[in-house]
Amino acid sequence: MKRFILLVSFLWIVSRPVVAQEVIYATQDTVYINAVEAALKALKEGDCTSCLAQYKRAFSVNHTSAMSALRASVCAYQCQQQEQALIYMKKAIALDWELSEEIWEDQQERPELAPLRASALAADFQRYLDEKKIAAGRNPDLERELAAIREADQKPRLKMDTVGREYGFNSPQAKPVWEEMVRADSVNLPKIERILQQYGYPGKSLVGEEQSMTAWLVIQHAPLAVQEKYFPLIQKAAQQGELEKSHLALLVDRIRVFKGQKQLYGSQVKNGPDGKPAGFEPIEDEPNVNKRRAEMGLGPLEDYARYFGFEYVLPKE
View (cartoon, rainbow, N blue to C red):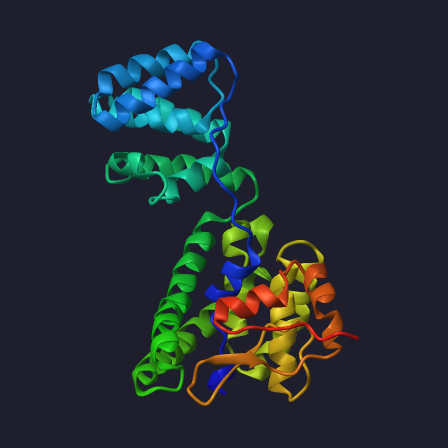
């Protein structure tokens, strides 16, 4: 059965397009743009006084950027103006709490916020954010619980990604990682079943887009009986827009392959004799698989195959 345990990190990467980042200003006013750029330069150079002065200049023209408000909060904190730092932080969340959360959590791309993340003000950020989420009908406590479950689910699978590619998924080196995955799944499944019983499917409107996939992830990695038990719930969530349709497609394929049937969307990969990905499990109506994939928000099967390290040619009708 190991060949059917597909690492979701693979699917996530190949099904989401890479979008180049570009600078988008709150206004095209040159005074504002020059001030914001000068403020950011001062922030990176550790000059909090100049940074604050430039942001105040920018905000006199326009004060609608959550990003700039958060960066101004960093400058105020570094200048030991904690009250002002809180004002800017709260302003950012009031302007766009979803973007503020995204910026806050993106530590790799937004390292300039590190002083705030490591400070006592981080608790205030979370409190302000939770207030906004609750007002929007979200459940921040459940989001955090799901985030922890998702991390536990993905940690051994990301490790298996590395080990499997280098040594093969059936290699001796992979054995302890398989065991770690089994242990994680045995702990995660009861947690998710409790959540499903209490809330129904925890979708986008309740826990946000990122955590809307967590319950599906755990069910995807569960035994066939569990997958079939919760399939109607997951299908309904996808139909209602609470879960991406691409996730439903993967569960459809997983169930079909487990039952010895041909898959519909080509998501299930089989290993070669060396234990490394070598091709796809049989696909029904294969010439039209990319059409079905597109309908479910999945990219071409050729790209998917290349990510796994093998070539695939779509058969002609």
